Length: 293
Image 1: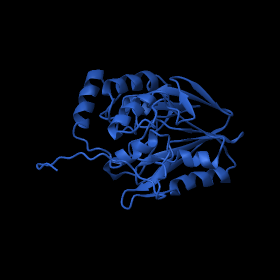
Image 2 (image 1 turned 90 degrees about the horizontal axis):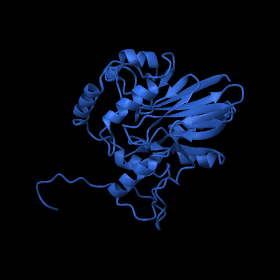
Image 3 (image 1 turned 60 degrees about the vertical axis):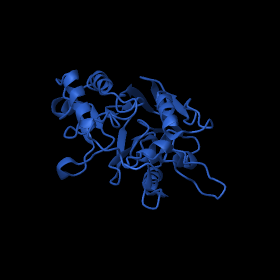
Image 4 (image 1 turned 180 degrees about the vertical axis):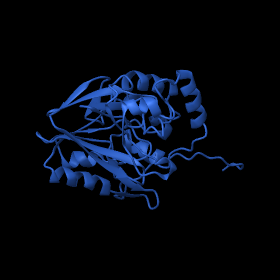
């Protein structure tokens, strides 16, 4: 197998989407695709999706899976656009998505029509399961902590870490979302990522370009263990947890958290059309007012 990786960067959400493919067989998967959303005007568009589709067509690739590293809180997933474009493709996520659905069903006060058994997705992945996408073999490494349903995907000599592990100069994902846990993240990164060979290539889910540097998305396990500013190989569990919890306590919520999670726990389905041929996002209000309303 001659493995290749194509990267797409969405500057609006700092998100990295990947197409991983076998240059010989043309078998491919897409990881963490973006559906463009502008909260000003609540405009949904498909430019990011179309970039991936154009690349797939130009290279005569056969897509087998949309792999979601987790239910993203900062961008909408375009997974259902891929389902429409490629009827045989499967949308896959960790089986632990059911716990995330249960939590956020309460947050959004969703009615009984929203079920929390994960059946909105085509494939629920178990920890350490190996998926086959034609000639591609994909090992699912559990890396929860940022969310309970986070997975990293090991494909050949490359691991795609989503929001668990970022570039060495940025660190790791935050752990203050509902059911997130810094101690769990530490143990999963050290046990399931830092145990990989040092030469394993790391492809991150976001890059926030600290210090204004150019966007970057690839490091190695060896580089992360030596240089990750939040979690080196010799960082103690208690030190990481203390740092992560203190840092997270001062972070603002992602700008698109409510729009994103509502769609993403439903496997990228947009809300159903209502009687006026319009769709509506449901966003809770967090009132911090001195006067009662």
